[in-house]
Image: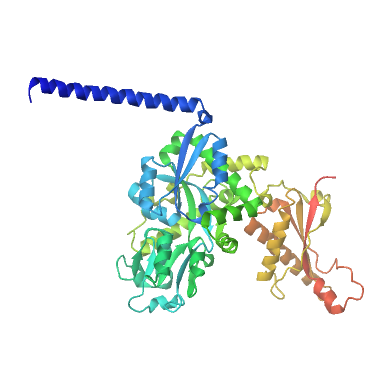
Length: 510
């Protein structure tokens, strides 16, 4: 190449660089102008959450959540990676995403290679029927059939996901050794739950492990049965919200903003079940009945449950730590780890509860953002309780117990669930739980039985609905305050009405 050609080439390169610089400068200027001359000028930043199509993530990625974050000056994007947990952990580590949703087991399994790049800041939900192993009934009708499954039996599942974890739990707890194998003809590895559903429907698999809404879609198919659902498990599949460790250090206030918005949205859905049903129906593509079934498979964790049960009132995880340790045991038993992979073998290294407890302390101080059944109340002494004005007893049919005991029957629990729904409408009243028995028999024995039954009801409200113990007063009245007899009422009918538990609302006002 002669000198003139080299000079010409140099001029082209320099000119191209200058033109590129000017073009880039114009683009930046245009971008700045668009921001400054629009409502986007109030935007503080863009946040991205890594997730998949699990219905439990609906509140986190709902339109209402995006609106809440928009009010706070942030745009929110939920990125569905089709359950590619390896990519999700990498994106969290690189800062490509700031938050990620995952089950405890998938984080333990996929986060290890990335030195656990996120800290758990909240429990989102627990699967209670939202995950399940389903199968063609003519091939597998029960879990026991897995032990003697014939050659050619196949199971479709998403590797490294809650689906595989459910299989590992079955292998460990029911001693089905081949399910622990990393290779084998039984394995049909898929890209997400929807892919596994397709394989099942096309009979490319004898069974499939799915999550909602795909579980409901599968069970709508004639000949498909559920072998095991997460409704029959406890602390096995728990979803958590992770934040990038780097992001939480640099922008803690943004983490607070996102958590505050999330629990406000969750409360909105709790107060407006129809809105939840409508949004879930739109997101899942199911009909109304199927959507209602899907929602029954999810148990969302409220702010109070997070602070007092999952992450512990003292700032250390309790139920969450149990879930982590249980998942680790299954993973070790499955051969995924030789030993505990956590730094210093310490599960608390994965948890950062400070954001949640700061938020909860503020909510308790103002009683804001707390569900109606979870409002906090001050302690009252006996005299103060006696000074309350009884407003009235909530309508109730007799709460059923096992005969002669204080053990709630299934029907009794269902009746209390109905009472809890009514109680949500009266968040400011104290609650007096009164236990009654019939008038026959030993008076002291009757009193003790009525006290035990009233205690059981109060305990059910506390455990199931997180009702503040300070809100409740429990009285065992035995047969001392029988109902008035109705005109023409038979002895049998009158005796049936006497044993009962009353839920009486009481006011501290005038």
